[in-house]
Image (tube, rainbow, N blue to C red; front, top):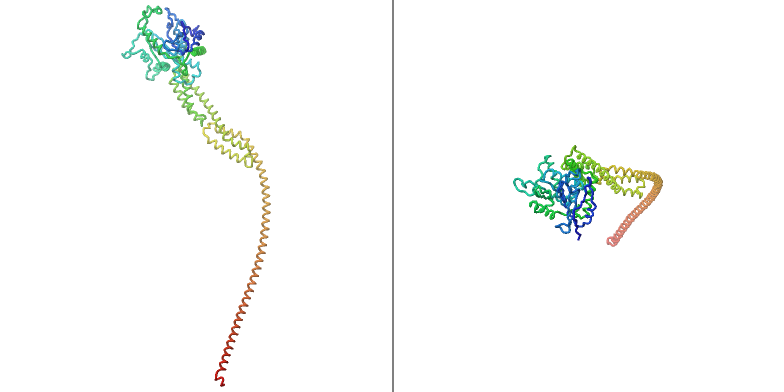
Length: 571
């Protein structure tokens, strides 16, 4: 468990010496030893509102005083009370210190007590608004990373709760004839007017800012503690000598502070301990020392500067966010990028106009225009570079295989240049088909082709040399083929002539054969004819012989008959 811190009396944390703020090393040493989480309560008000109030009109606190004590309600927490020198101290003379002290109190505390007199008026609201804006500016100056758009919850957790205390309150807590609480009185005082009239905008601006930076607000009213004649001895008076209502009001105030004041929280939700509060003190005092912060005397001009600077930054942040969401570099055309720029530019200007305050001579609007023009130029430059990078990568990817083929000698042959150019055209068509090359597409391609012209020329020269050699070889080959063809032709003629001779010989022999066959046939036919004639004659002769034989036979038979006949015998 961390040890408790016991301080018998307050020490000055930040000294205001001759108008210059300096950090007290002794106070830092005390802070550095506190390891417990801190609840930091800061009080700011008019002069004579310090830890000890003297009987004169001389302000006691010079700078910011610190008192670290064990928290009466939260175990293992340390309560850090910060009291500031009174605002508008006539002895101090330098009102610039007022704004610095006021701003530091807001930045260092987790509960900020704003102590004013009598009632809530426009002056008190404007003062709180101005210093709140100044605190935000100071925080941004001390932390450059906060120039980005900060998380709203992170921002709210860093700023303190607001407790507005009203000393010697003399008004009746009523509104529209009805009783109201002190908190309702505060809310009514910070309520916005509904219309957009310029005067009402000026009325609403500080209230809107206070509501934004102090979402948790509480109001306490205090009657006069005692009779005016006894105010000079106020420190020596006992509670029973004070007005009972005042005593109760103080008790209610202390109860709220002890029970509801939150732990000091840094960006990212970190609960601050002593060393971290020490670091905040050094950081913010250093920022004040190095920065030319505006003072209360020029609050309207200073507030305009703060608000308009913030409006410019907000507009630029919105422009950056919109362009980051909408723009994908490289764009296909410059017009596409310009259209996106103009749309984002229009929204940025609208945001600036909504958040600006008394931009005299449109100084900040012109500054915004200059920044937006620079943003446009930068985007155009980025677009060119993105397009060049994209095209270079595409060209390398698409034409890489062609370059490798060239190295391998694929095109080192007759007609190789024609094939090379044909392949180049195919790859160019493939390159043109690739999307989102951007505005450098054609120029990058032409530069690439120009860079490879020597390679193309070398292929062309090789092609010509090899083509000429091939032509000679082809001519020789053609001559050889012509000679071979002629020899083949002559051989063919010879063979044809030989075939003709042989054919004629065969025809002659065939004719002889046919003639022989015809002669043989005729002889055979003649032989057959002779044989038939002989046969016929033989047959005829045979027939005549046979006829004669028959005739003789018949004659013989007749003779025999006749011989045998009686008549013949008689005769």
